[in-house]
Image 1 (cartoon, rainbow, N blue to C red):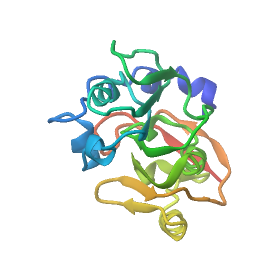
Image 2 (image 1 turned 60 degrees about the vertical axis):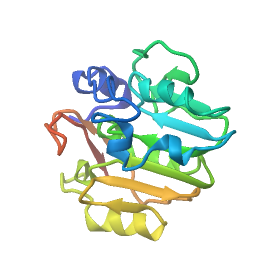
Image 3 (image 1 turned 60 degrees about the horizontal axis):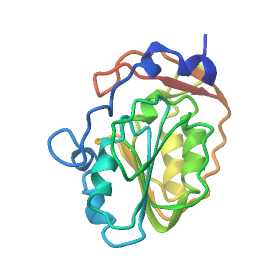
Length: 211
């Protein structure tokens, strides 16, 4: 049986996942290590903006706020378990339905899409929130996107993403693009399965089903 968003949000796999609870801005267990670049270096200068979806405790944003003068930093997470600190705006809300009131220079989702139901629907929305020249980077295991018969969407999905200017690194399980994109995908979301088991991270994840 596939779960809708309401049921998925109270699933132990989603509600209790602690993937970004302790992740720092830099160091061994950090955003810089996972993303492959230092967000502070990318956002150097005044007036830049960073949206971090599935931000966990928000520690990375809080640390970045002390290093970036005048930056707009926003973090969104399903669970209100934010670390104490000043600087970023930290919002407890489902990322599937939350919408910002501005565009961003950097949008990240570090190991968060693993727990989202409609992964493709969220991607379509995220890519519209970039400023021209803005950068989006997220972790995504494409084998977690399944068709109604249970088979991975596979090469067809990868081809459609790349045709829209969205890059996918299969070895690193990383998706990204530069500048806003209009992503039109011929898939209808059916629901999610929280019994998919561990993915490449070794942690239980969620499969998303489409027709």
